[in-house]
Amino acid sequence: MLGLGSVGTDSERLDDHSDLDFFVVVDDGAKERYLTDLAWLEDAGSVAYSFANSVDGRKVLWADGLYAEYAIFTLDELRAGSYFGARVVWAREDAPDGIELAGRPLPPSPYDLPEYQVGEALTNLYIGLHRDLRGERLAAARLIQAHAIDRLLTYLDLTGAAARPRQDPFAVERGAERRFPSDVLPLADMVPGYERNLEAALAILAWLEARTEVSTQLADAIRSVAEQVRARRIS
Image (cartoon, rainbow, N blue to C red):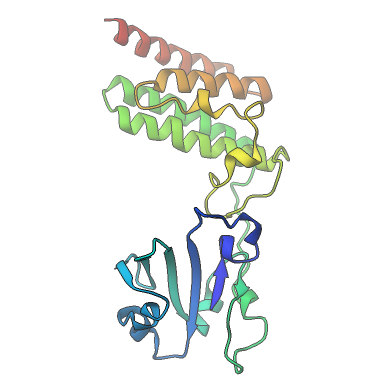
């Protein structure tokens, strides 16, 4: 059994609100049994709810409120995947040494460039405001207040502005408040909610302009669409 996340090598994050993320590595031929027969989970306590959330794993809630997400892998499957911060919680005597490091390293991304993140964020704002004008506020909110924010978080990581490393290489938003204080990233202004896509977009645009080179033409285009959104509100 390999613990991951706050029950892996990053255990200082473990608190009353943590869930349990783990891998169970089994013999060839045993995977299906561990996925379908939950008796081994019942040994830890009464299971209140569980469902298969992928072909490899399940989510489970025990009656005492403990919650977990787990996957079942054979050793070959484990070696074929990429994972981060694993810790051996328990192993049979015949388990191979270094099993917590058996996965493939995460491949470098060709998009890990600050200018790429800026371009993506700006175009998210432009397209998002147009969707708001069309009446697609939810789609607009996701582009402006979710996708663009992810790009800002990645931009800060790439430019060395984070107070601490990312806690999850697959989810840039995890621990954002601990990594970026409000004077570095004013999230309350940038994620004000469903009704305020206009304010969010202008706050993000101003933040980018204060920190990096922004295309004047694109900034003007974003502000032009923002004024159309404002006029639509008034009318």
